[in-house]
Length: 423
Image 1 (cartoon, rainbow, N blue to C red):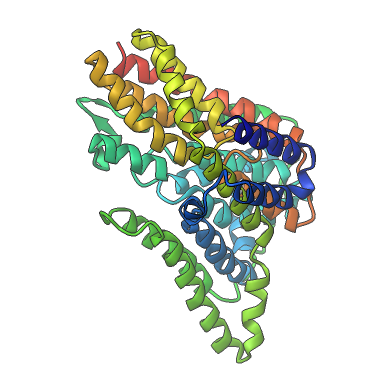
Image 2: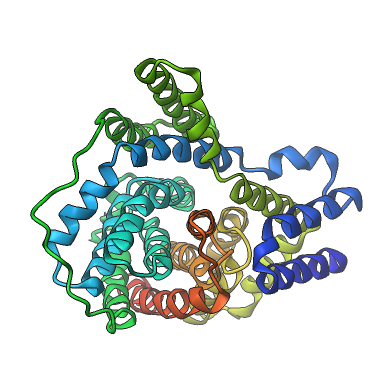
C-alpha cells in the first residue's frame, strides 16, 4: 500500500507542476501501476470508466457540428442582450451550466455549454479561462441536486432506495436538493465577487447571428433528453450514456456527409475530439484503480469511520470535510462506492439513522473535486477545451475560483444537512 500511495502522490505533484504534460504523466504512472503489478491485469478494464470516455468523445463530435452551425454564436448574442456587463455574463453562464447539470452528466454539460461561453468571450474580447472554470465548477456542484445529476447521486439513491422526488422531499423534510441550491446561491455570489472587476459594458448589437443549420442543435438537445430518459431506466449497462452520446454523434456525422456530399465532412468533428483529455482521464482511471486494488481507498474509509468515536456530529463533520479533501485528488465514484457500505456499518453499530452521514458524504465528495484542476472529470474537460483554443490554465487560475467556490457551496450545505437531518 505504501508504494502505491507514494507513486500516486508523486504523480499528482508532477501533474500540478508540469500542467502541459499531464496526459503523458498520468498515462506513464498508470503503466507503472500495471507493470509493477500494483494494478493486476484482471483489474485494468474494470478500472477504466469507458462510459465517461465515450461520453466525452461522442459529445465533442456533436458539439463540433453544433459550433459549425453558428448556434453558439446566436445563443451568445441572446445572453449578451439580457445582461448588463461582463460580470453578469460570467455568472449567467455558470448558473446556466448548473441548471443543465442537475439533469445531465457534468462532463457532457461542460462540453455543451463551453462553446457558448467561448463565443461570448470572443465577442467581448475577454479572457475565457475564468468563464470556463466557472462553468466547470458549477456543473460539479449541481450534480448532487437530483437523482439523475451525477453517478454518485445515483449510487446514493440506490443505497437509500430514493426516488427522484426524494431528493426534493425526504422523510417529511426538505431534501438534499435544497442544500445544493443553497450552496449554489451563495457560490453565485462568490462568482460575482470574483468577477466584480469585469464591469465592461456589453455592446448591444441589433444584428443577431444567423444559424446555418439547426440539425446539430436538435441532436445536442436530443442528447440531453435521451440522457435524462436513460437515467430512469433501472439496471441499465454502465456504458449506456457513452453509447448514447456516440450514437447521436454518428447520426450527426452521417447527416453531415449527406448534406455536404463528401466523406471529408466526417474528419473535422473527429479531429475536434480532445484525445489529450481522454488520455489524461485514462491515466487517472488506471492510477485510481491501482490504489484501490492496493486497499488505499478502503483504508481511508475505515480510518474515517474510527475518527467519530461514537459522536454523530463529529463523525458527520469528519465525513464531510475528509470527503472534500479526498475527492480533490481521487475520483469520487470509487470513493463513494467504498464509503456507502462503511456508513451502513457505522449506522448499524451505533443504531442511528444514517441519512445525515449519507448526505454529508454526497455533498463533500461531489464538491471536493472543485478544489483542484484535476479533481473532477468536468474540470479536466473544461481545461482541455481551453487548451485546444490556445489558452494555458495555471493552477493559480483554477485555485482562485475553485477553492472559494467550494467553501461557499459546502459550508451552507454542511449546516443545512445537520439542521434538518442531524439534530
